[in-house]
Image (tube, rainbow, N blue to C red):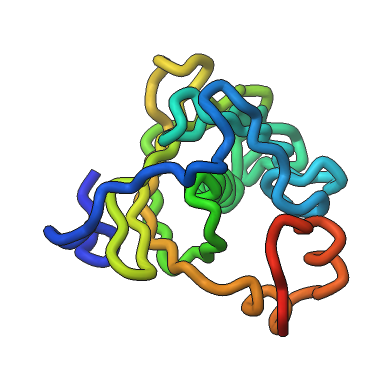
Length: 184
């Protein structure tokens, strides 16, 4: 994948390490918000990704393309695939126990993904420099070692929880994130 300089870590980027309180290898990560389109269990047409960390530094998830996710007849919508990549990448920064938001997402579509296909997603962090995290992901058709259908590279920016309180719903944050202190 050819990436822009905006999603390539600088030479002085640090090697990411999971936070000491991050879920141990083999653990499901859970939803960061119940109504999230990507991982929320309460979103009626969402992707319903369930992610886990196999090794404490990468994240894996599966997504089965449904009829609500199609663009062309019986094929996944490219925007939905980009959303799945954004979600699995966002779940990988969860391992650092810091809130991040997407700053840039570059997505390459390599193969069509038919409705009914299970896409196996994997994401990892290539480096952190200041508030910037440089991440990648891939989606494989049918199995973790299946053909690569979609790849992504991303730049995520660390923010404070106040960012979500200022721009989102403070009551929802407080209800679902007791492990973060929010002082708007």
